[in-house]
Amino acid sequence: MFKRLREDIAVVFDRDPAARTRWEVLTCYPGLHALVWHRLVTNPLWHAGARWLARWLSHWSRWLTGIEIHPGATIGRRVFIDHGMGIVVGETAEIGDDCTLYHGVTLGGTSWNKGKRHPTLGRAVVLGAGAKVLGPVLGGDGAKVGCNAVVVRDVPAAATAVGIPARIITGDDARRREAQAAKIGFSAYAISADTNDPMVQAIHSLLDHAAATDARLQKLIERLQRDGLDWADAKATADAFDPSQINRMLE
Image (cartoon, rainbow, N blue to C red; front, side, top):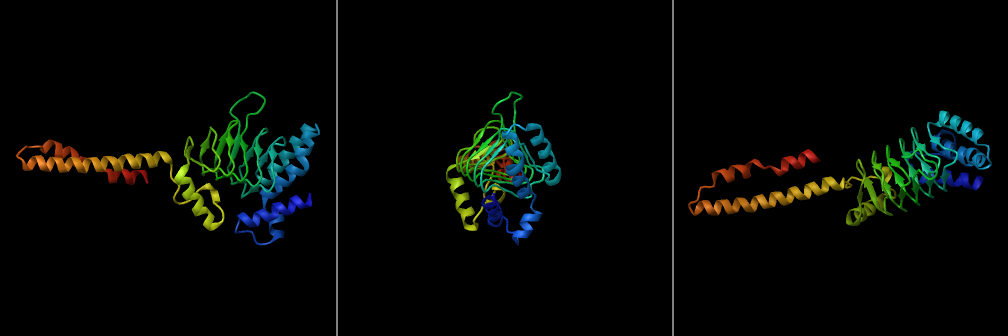
């Protein structure tokens, strides 16, 4: 028990620069209180068959910490809940070792049927503030879910999900983000300055292509006008397209 508690305290210092002393962490971090209460009290009672008592005591933990963890949920080691207010973890949710959850996170279900209906998180998953992961989806090892994203399908290992509904950033974008996060030691809130919605990135790419095509068309119009052809209408249409204005609207 004390070894697990020391691990939980140590992980706060690893992931929260505001932590100053062990006494402060032990007495002032509701995320730590909710996890310890779940591991030592409500979860053992749930598996021992005292389910009403487990639910009743978890209700008091929610009242004291602002964090609702169903006593049936499975939570691994060195999990860190930062701030914590408004977090909801459902009955069949599974949280792997070294995961991080920020305030407002929901690990919820989308079905009224019994059985597995809540998410499963692998190791070292980070869920940004307000993220909603819904249904029996899988968050692979090292996955990140950006702030306020709504995830309704699996997130591959080491990928990032952003947007509503969440879209997946993989490949070069994910590697660049991970390299940047490694410089500071931790990718707080599962987001970094260069992480953008992949749909927005696709629109930017299409606008860049449209701008290049427009420039080539403009050169063709000018060449035809020099040869004596009147393409005033085509030139007016080309001038009306301003890709930079649309790009600014998407920023």
